[in-house]
Image 1 (cartoon, rainbow, N blue to C red):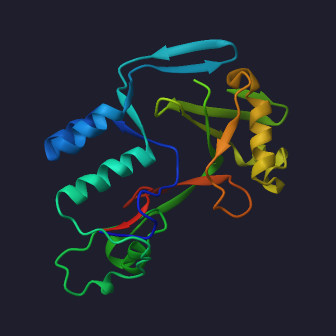
Image 2: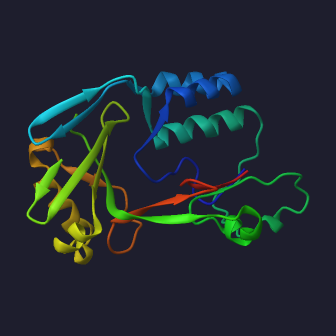
Image 3: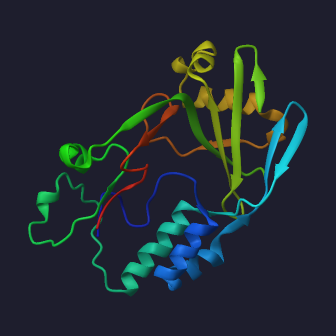
Length: 231
C-alpha cells in the first residue's frame, strides 16, 4: 500500500458506517470488524430539532468512529498480515506500478485515475448547491435573517462530536461567509448555534486548507469521497 500522508496521519473527524456495512465487514474481515466494533459508538435513533420541536425516528443503525482510530486499526491489520506500507509517497499515475496485476486507486472525488480513464469510467460528477463546513466539538436548525442553516451532529469517540454546518449558497453569500477566513467562520457558527453548544467551542481540522473552509458536496456516479490511498 502506498500512502501520500505520514504514518497514522489523517484529516477529518469521524467516519460513519451503517449496520449493513459492518455486517459486510464482519464477513470479509472479522478481525478488523471486531477491532472497530470495540472502538465505535453506535446509535439507532436520529433526532431532528426544528422550531422548538424534537422529532425522533428509529431503526437507522449507524456507528461512528474517529478517523485516526480507524486508520490505526487498518494500518495495524496490514502490518499483521505482512502488507508492505509505503508513506509520504504521492503517486501520480498507475503506470508507476508496471509489475502489478491489479491497481486499486482510492484518491477521492478528484481522482486522477478516474480523470485519466474518463472514457472508460464515464464519471458523472455533480457539484451540489449547498455550502458546508466540517467542524467538531467536545460538547456531548437555526434560521437567520437571510435563511436557514442546519447542523449535522453525531458523536464518534468518547470525547468528540462531529458538527457539520450546512446552508444554501445564497444564504452563505448573504452572510458574507465567502469573505470570511476560518476563524471568522468558526466564530459565526459558535454564535449561531450557541443554544446547542451551551458554551462549548467548535474546532476545525482544516488548517491545511487555504482561505475558506467552506466546501461543496460533490456526487459522482463512479466514486464517492475518500482519502488518497493506492493499494
